[in-house]
Length: 457
Ligand SMILES: *Cc1c(COP(=O)(O)O)cnc(C)c1O
Image 1 (cartoon, rainbow, N blue to C red):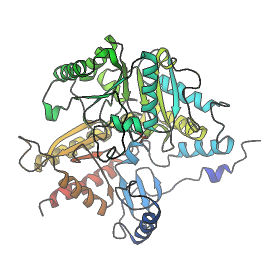
Image 2: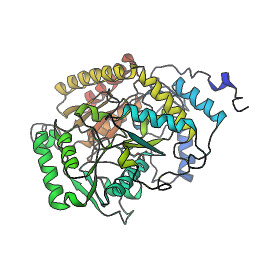
Image 3: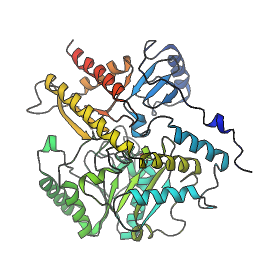
Image 4: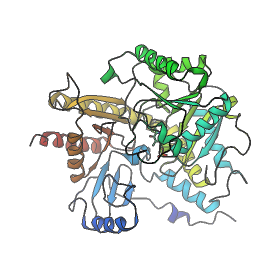
C-alpha cells in the first residue's frame, strides 16, 4: 500500500485572490524582520531583487508575510509558466510524494522519468529518434549538453554568443557574456570557450544573413569549425535582454554547424515550454536543433532540467557517464508531466499570444510618449523594453539603467514585481505566467505607465 496519502488535504485548493493589494510599506515589517535574520545567516553572494518574503502564491499573484499581494511579472524567471501552485501540478506532485519520493533513476528507475522523456521527444522540434537525460538545473543541462557534444564529436571547442547567459557552474560561468557578477574572482574559468558576435538588430542594424556571416567568419578565424564540438545559442536571449535575432540568423548558423559537424545546441531554458506561444522558441525561427536544453518552466516550479536530442548524438555518452543523485527526481518528473498535460490542452499557447498582444500594444503606446523607451521586442509572454538615455533613441541608444531601476522600484511600491535584464541593466522584461488574466496584466501596465510618468518628476 503505497498510495495512502491524505488526498483531500494534498489537493486543498490555494484560494489566493487574483488581485493586487498593498497594505504596508514595501517591504513590510515582517519582511524587514526576516531580512535581518537572513543577513545573519545567508551570504550576500545570494542576493534578492525585492526582499519581501513570500508566504503564498497562486496563479499570477504572490502574497508576502505582511499581506501585500504582488502581480508577478517575473514568474520566478519564467519558471511558473502555467501559474503558481497550478492545481494539476500540486496534485501530481503531492500524489507522487506519497508514492515514491526518491529511488535514484540510475539505481532503480520509475515511469515518470520515462514519461517526461517521451513528452520532450514529442514536443521538441524535429521528427527523429530522440533521447533525454534529466538533471536538476539549467546550468547542469548546459554542462551535460556540452559533455555529450564533446563525446560525440571528439572535439573540445564550445562556441557561444555575445550577451549569452548559461549559468553559474564552472563551465557555464565561462560561457556567460557578463563577467560581473557571475565570474568575477571565481576563476580559473574553463577553457576552450569561444564567444562570437550575436544578432542584435536594435544595435547592429544587420540583416540575419549579414549577422550570421559575421558570426561564422569570426568563429572560422578565431577557432575553426574543425575544433568546435558545439555552438550553444539561446533562440531568444534571456538575461541578455530578450534579444530576438534577425530573421535568418539562427537558420544560417545551424546550416553552418550541420555542414561542419558542429552540434547545434538550443538553450531553451528561458524561452521554452510554451512561453513564446510555441513549445520551444526554436519553432519561430524554423530551427531544428541537434540538442534542446530545457529547465525553468518544465516542472511548474520544481527543480528539473533536461537535455533532449538526436539519438545518435545522445547515445555517444558511455553508460554511467550521465546522471546524478537527484536528476529526474520522481516528484519533479510527475510535476513536469502535469505541466505538459496542461499545455497540451492548447490554452497556454493562446494565452501566450494574448499576453504578447496586450504587452506589445501597451508598451508601444508608452514608447510613443516616452522617448527613453528605445525598443519594444519579444514573442509571446517574453516581452521586453530597452531603455535609453533621453534624446539618444535615434543616435547612440545609450543605456539607461537608472530609469529601469526607478520603474522597478515604483512598480514594487505599488504591488507589481517586474524584472530587469540586459548586459547594461537597461532592459525591463515581462515574463508573466500564462495564467495571468487580461485584467491583471492591464492593471500592471497601468502601474508601469505611472512609473514612466514620474520619471521626470
Ligand atoms: C536560467 C538560465 C540558465 C541556468 O539555469 P539554472 O537553473 O539557473 O542553472 C541557463 N540558460 C538560460 C538561457 C537561462 O535562462
